[in-house]
Length: 299
Length: 229
Image (cartoon, rainbow over all chains, first blue to last red; front, side, top):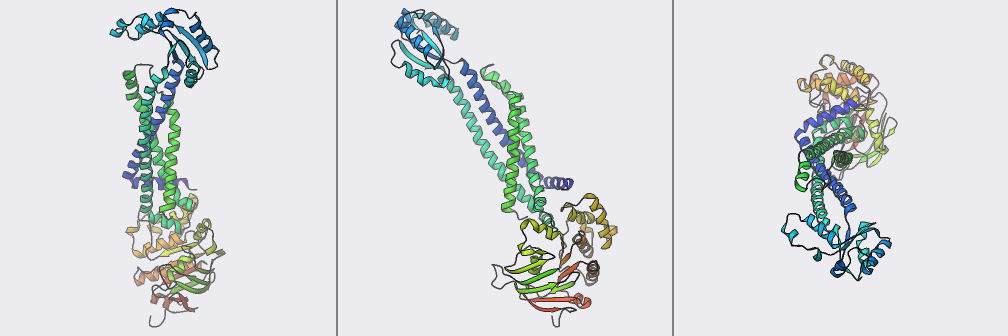
């Protein structure tokens, strides 16, 4: 194998179709950039879920009469519920919160707002705050407490946070769809480029066939051409993800949600997706190139 | 060296076969003219030898290869031992004379040191030693054909096929090319040349195989082009 010969052919080919090459690099970069964004969104959603999963509880609100009579969960109804919860294999821990504590929490949450002034401790329910072994088992917990005396309401805090997650998931889905369309466009462009390149080099290829160059030798320059554009495109995609994080994302997240609400995407996160992007970029380019050569170009 | 046994070749687009029961045997080191009017099957004959096409019936042998039955991956090996020259030269316009010749060696994976040694030798043989760095468009037709011959010969093929190599050249230049092909023939290479050129065939008095409507109508050891053609 004459590497410098193949290398020279690749460079010549890329230079000859320079506009096509640029278009292909950009399309690859955009499609893989979007795909990378999608993967990072998935990563963020996972991280956010685990961040909140640890803090979130299922709140079992007690009826007001039980709440006002029992300030330390020592009476039969509350104590019965608490011991039943503690003995359940679903439950990791149970904490009782009486009306005074509920009021304190309420005041803290709505500090400075008129709502805070309207509430009275007597109006707020006491509650058993349950942490589950598996946060997805809320329904089993509901079934366990179904129809029990003293229980007014069961609230899964995850339902509230779910709205944030569904927003993130929508972003992810949109980004993935766009990325898919772009990947398709990139594949078509690659196919086009290989055909054009083969047409431009038909004399060379004809001579190569004539003097007995192997199929591998005639095809390799085309495939490498496609692969090189794939690599450069992916490098651009990874570069713009890193730049996007540095320039926009960090400030956008901290301005929009405040620090610590959504976990920040780390540089290492981007670097950990990039091998997949490279694999995909080179893979799509080479496979499309190969299929095009087999189907459309007689070598 | 070349043997066709009852070879027929039909194309789907034509009712008449391009070659019809052709049997020809060419020995090692022979010089053979393949003549006949346009459409008589000369080009098909050459295409079969290069495995550009496969016969509909019959067997084609080149050296020890059963060409028609050669697996695809072995076709390059056949073509490395069969040189080829055309009427339209088929040079790469963006490469110099030396690069054009070197290209034929590079694409079959020959080492750079071999290429550097062999290319000047073959350019010397075809009389282009002083023009190695010229571009094809700076050369005359005859010189361009010499480059093409050099390229076909540089890997020392067993057989050299020439498809109307003098078709685009004036008579004097044609004579030069014929002298060159003769010289190559003297090195032991079998030469098979398809041509329309009466004067060349008549002056060289070599073996002549004449095709007409896909059949061999004449095969003479020291033939001429033929009366009234």
